[in-house]
Length: 198
Image (cartoon, rainbow, N blue to C red; front, side):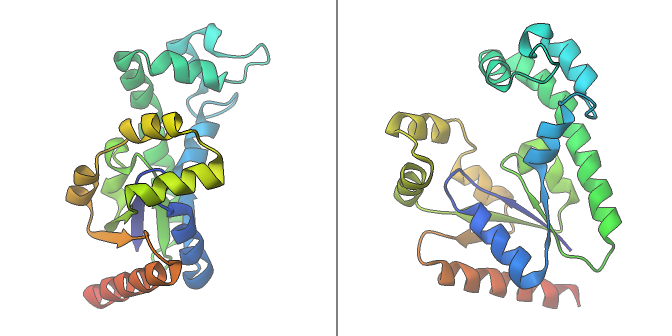
């Protein structure tokens, strides 16, 4: 069974993932880590990424200059699209291989903020949208990450709208309140999926 977990920043996806790992022994597949490693020296798409972005986006030792890459691609929509066109297929291919390696009996959970945009959703049996009220998300980001109000506003504005997440999701897990309520919703959703597959 493969579950794709997505949602906006501050929604509490990490807490849900940890619960699934701890209680259900789920294999958590971190697509951000796969994408980061892919553009490091020796990574799966290092050469293509360096050719696209140019030497100015890389440090003297060959490692990617991530702040420079971010500022470069987020000012150029066409370049960002080209970069995604290199990285996303590699991530999907790597995740597919990881799922196959785990075997059919495993519970695999793909965590990705770009689950819908990257094509990773095609690998999932079910897509869960981890939702939290905007006020809750703002409070979490301020307290746990020290984000300024402006950074929170800009980050949220750049993310996928709530309505799009809801349209694509098979389940919405509300993580606005006490986590015990979230855990109960997760348990119920997994039980429902298990019954549906029998």
